[in-house]
Length: 203
Image 1 (cartoon, helix red, strand yellow):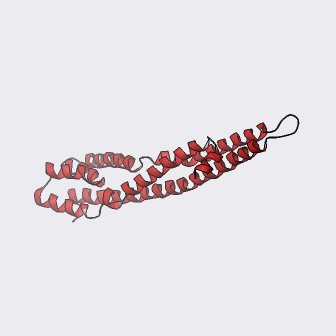
Image 2 (cartoon, rainbow, N blue to C red):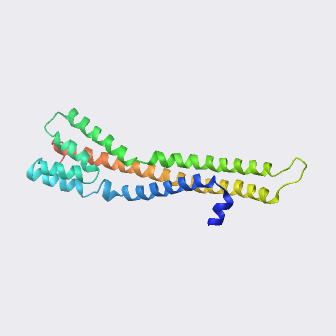
Image 3 (cartoon, helix red, strand yellow):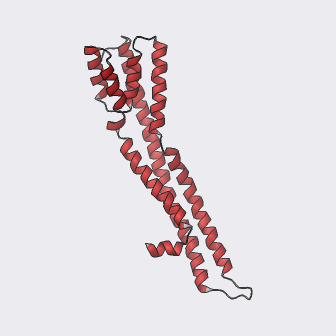
């Protein structure tokens, strides 16, 4: 592997750095976007049961705030249970926007890496081409070692740049879709909770 990196030249280090960052984001998002962390299905029934038996308590609000992300939305609704419907709706929407931003964390960075890594591969290709042209002497001769190194730099950087870009794009789109699904699920549960608080729906 080290020999490949040496053959690819110094431009490859930029691509390696982007690949490490992309892997870290992919791992972190896989861990953070689990349904059990964001919107477990058993949290709404448990919240409704406790609300119906004890009402809104500070302990309940604290546990919801510190638990899964959807708990912040539930806490916003419960904290405004006696307010007009529009106030409750605004509070839930504000909490929902904050949670959505949390779900989308690092995704823009991953999308940027998907684009930039291809450009970094192109940058390495240009550096390799410059070395290829630099290996040619005015008399028509050339330095075979410099020519070979230039070709290696050009090809390896193109290969690694595309190799990083493809999975970055795939996982970016995957996580975007995952966020959309989770947001719809949270909206559905939040609406149900608000309707129960307003007496418009039975648990």
